[in-house]
Length: 288
Image (cartoon, rainbow, N blue to C red; front, top):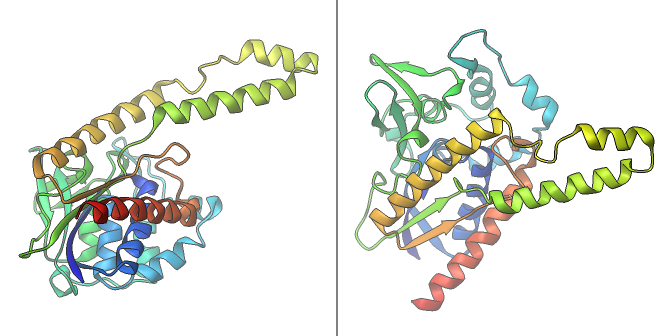
């Protein structure tokens, strides 16, 4: 059995693929000896270290679009859209809080100090406090205020914290990066969908009018522009960290069919993670 120091990246709902990676690692006899995570990677990693990943997976099976809306506590604040309290309380109902120092394996979560632009690494204290700070997506979730600091999503500074995981002699450093997105493939799929929709409307006069009114680049607007810009910056930071730390194995999972809010597609995302991990491990074993 080979020990692994496992690092899980940010990536929103795409981070559910981390579950599949963990399952495949265990099924092939690898032992996760320590874990570090950022944002969704912190949530998955923390629940794994607490021995509760199975409970979380089962709960995610119940999450559909309606339940997602029920878990959103909208805010009238000017600096965030969602308070983020309902989702944490819902998870606490199935997975009780625990002190990080009491977890079965060493774990840490990375957040960002908004005022000083520094990493904040949680290695002790409430697991949920660490997760909540690490997933605090700027402008979406209410920032966390702790010890005089304003804490936001760790992905802003270090989306793949390979330099923060606890290491043990002889272990393998394994990173799982779901921060990337295959935008070229996604755009191609969107174009095909629009062309199909237009063909279906072409038979009527109203359809022909709509085809003239709806621009071909409808997906290009200020929301998608800001979202993609942020994603590209996070992706670049994760690639630079991988170049700096040179992990023994980097499982790079770029997706074209799933976005950051596809939490209702958990099982499909888990399958993607498991399949990618299987291929990456096969390639690793082939050169060892």
